[in-house]
Amino acid sequence: MSDIKNVDYGLEKIFEGAQDFLPLLGTDYVELYVGNAKQAAHFYKTAFGFQSYAYKGLETGSKDTVSYVVKQDKIRLVLTTPLNSKHPINDHIVKHGDGVKVVALWVDDATQAWKETTSRGAKSYMEPTTEKDEHGEIVRSGIYTYGETVHIFVERKNYDGLFMPGFVKWESEYNPEPLGLKYIDHMVGNVGWGEMNTWVKWYEDIMGFENFLSFDDKQIHTEYSALMSKVMSNGNGRIKFPINEPAEGKKKSQIEEYLDFYEGPGVQHIAVATNDIIATVKGMRARGVEFLSTPPDTYYSAAPERLAEFDHELREDLETLKKLGIMIDADEEGYLLQIFTRPVEDRPTLFFEIIQRMGARGFGAGNFKALFESIEREQELRGTL
Image: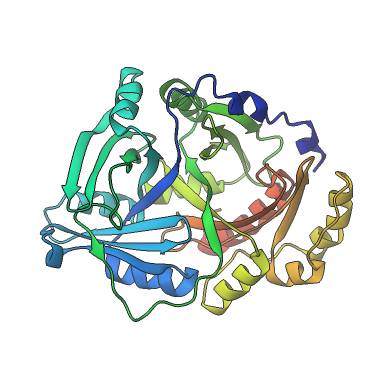
């Protein structure tokens, strides 16, 4: 826990925005390519409390793909499935399984965002394209990042429709109550051996991001495995992308397992914020969401001392957090509460983090050992440790 006290967040430099040639307003949506979008949408509605929002498919004139958009507060997930065997999305699903394809970023000028990034060396995924309907127009452009993942820049200032042209409102009688998820806090990418610094430099050079937090294998390790991670942030701090790579250990790390089953780099997890993690996690557990195993009693008995190092006092009931398996960490600014789901599909790849920040700006460094030991217990059951 003491390691994080020495971390320099460097946020003051970031928020000055001196290098912010690519102003990002926030996360616009996250698109997952999935084997059955209708069923995936039902899962995210039932288990996570998302609501029916928008739809594109055969009924709207889309002959080769179908997309369901689900929404909860500021979070929009787009679930897309091909409608025939010849569509190239099939290749992505066959190789990776269900996974994140697009991390869409909301910008004021999608054409300029594309010009800025491609002029700095980004590989183009989508040239600036204007899409129109009776509600106005949206401009989108895109670039490739690690693996087959892409960033699409979305310009909405001349559009007052529901989501974007081609989509209609998704009317559904089945909309379970939301579970308090507010926005995407950060998204974590896993890359291959020795590739972390390459992608750190890519985000610095191509998108003007800053590396404001780093962890090496001395901080992120257990008896058996290790990894390294660097957190990248854009100029205003609204977009944060930690990037992980494996490190040498006695056994296979969770990053190696992900790379094996995803068959390449990709988005490892999506961290979603809540203002009441206890209510959110209780609701998710009641709806069948599976979380990683609870840390041992010694973890929770040491929690007050960890908080006291930073002169913070826990407002939540410790026994309740222990019962739910919610972890606690702190830095100079405050503390945070976090918990991680098991993978949300059969391949041990994509999972979700639920996080509540009580002032803390870190990423749970004090929880790394307990978290990774929990993941290793899951790996042992899968025979992949």
